[in-house]
Amino acid sequence: MAAPHRPGLRIAGGVTIPKAELSWRFSRSSGPGGQGVNTADSRVELVWDAAGSAALSPLQRERLLTRLNGRLVDGVLTVAASEHRAQLRNRDAARARLAELVADALRPPPPKRRATQPSRGARERRLKQKQRRTDIKQMRRRPSD
Image 1 (cartoon, rainbow, N blue to C red):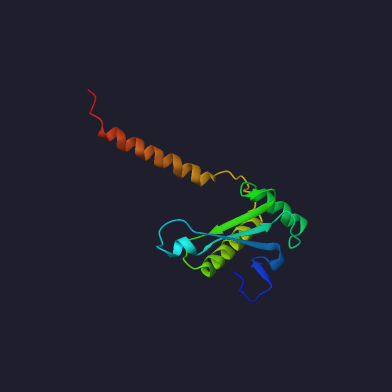
Image 2 (cartoon, rainbow, N blue to C red):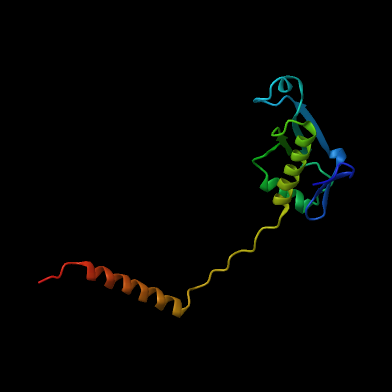
């Protein structure tokens, strides 16, 4: 998470979203809170145009747009935070949430699994264990005359 004095939002992997690309919206939070909830605009929405961002390389942009496809509206990512009573804490929470979302989306995919066959010893152990269970269950049966 970036500190307030830094010029942008740092994401893992060396990506920094410029401050100019982030826009904020504020509204009243829902839920209990007494008189404060009716007057304070503590709910925060952080909006970032991922499709038009200059902070991403073409490969990163493609990966991000693919992975966050369900969360994007016309290439724009919106993150809301309203769990704290103070607007400043909700701002920090929204920044952290956006950074985590983008970092997860930019992470390279895991390597493909290479199919392997069980070893001969593993096959023999499996069959031996199956035979042991068969013998145990046969011992539980009534003796046949």
